[in-house]
Image (cartoon, rainbow, N blue to C red; front, side):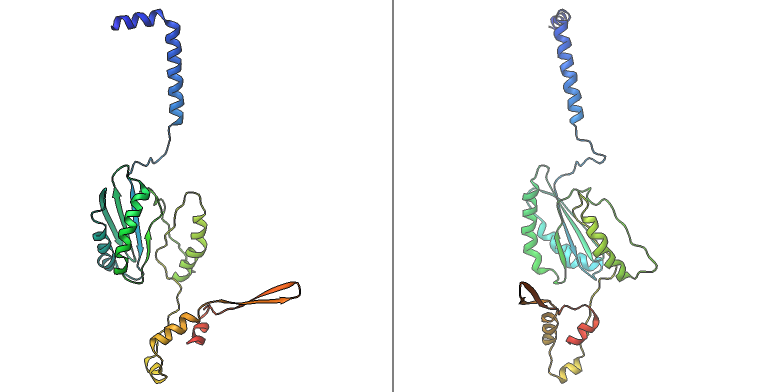
Length: 245
């Protein structure tokens, strides 16, 4: 059999040259069409859950948030691994699924389980499922260093200047901010004065909530022009809060 193949190749030289050229051309085309990446993604389907818990230590995050979510995620169909990292004021939970699992189906399963345990978590947390990314998604971490800016000013710079700009970069799914001091207005009630004036904590909370907003007040027509009327009540300075309470 082998001798016949060799004899056929020697007698049909032109045909062999054409076949060889075709195979070589197909090989070159296939090689050029191969996807090339400096860091090829060979990972399985993953769904990440990122929960932010301001002020909580890693131990509190682990006991009050991470452990509850992990127990709820146990037994998910096609799940292969469940792992988490509890940090200061944040927890990062990763659910791995079997290779070939549809990412949208996997996210639906995780969302249903997360919704079932959400009411059992602390009320002041935020977050949920992270955007669809690969395990190589966390590509860059940076810090803001300045001797002139306070921690609050650094956080404001990150939240309102740097973060929006980074999210406009093609391919960036999300930018997470950690550390610093978020600007807040804190109201410390004077229990004695409130009792003397028959003011409850609920009254104080209602006054702060209802008076911290900008509302529309209709439209004022002036000939061919229309002027929009609005009342500005949103807190901007400490004096605004003091005038309310």
